[in-house]
Image 1 (cartoon, rainbow, N blue to C red):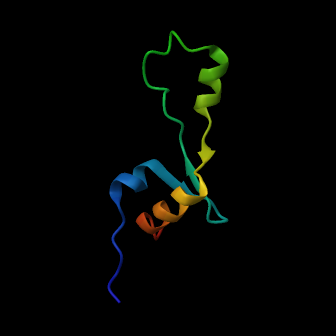
Image 2 (cartoon, one colour; image 1 turned 120 degrees about the vertical axis):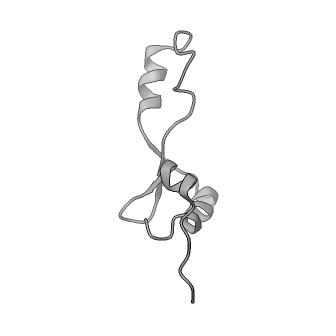
Image 3 (cartoon, rainbow, N blue to C red; image 1 turned 45 degrees about the vertical axis):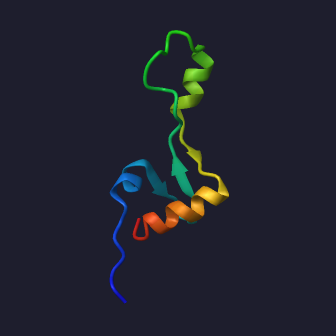
Length: 65
């Protein structure tokens, strides 16, 4: 079997946890922040787990992470 190549775009955006779940950052936190509440911006800072269908796809993209 040949080695699998890592999808570099996915490797920069996702991380695998120790249990195999996929962690991602929230969107909407780059610009136009003045119209967003402080509470919303604070919540967007934190990373969240990717949904189950996305986890399956991303796991194939980052096999060695």
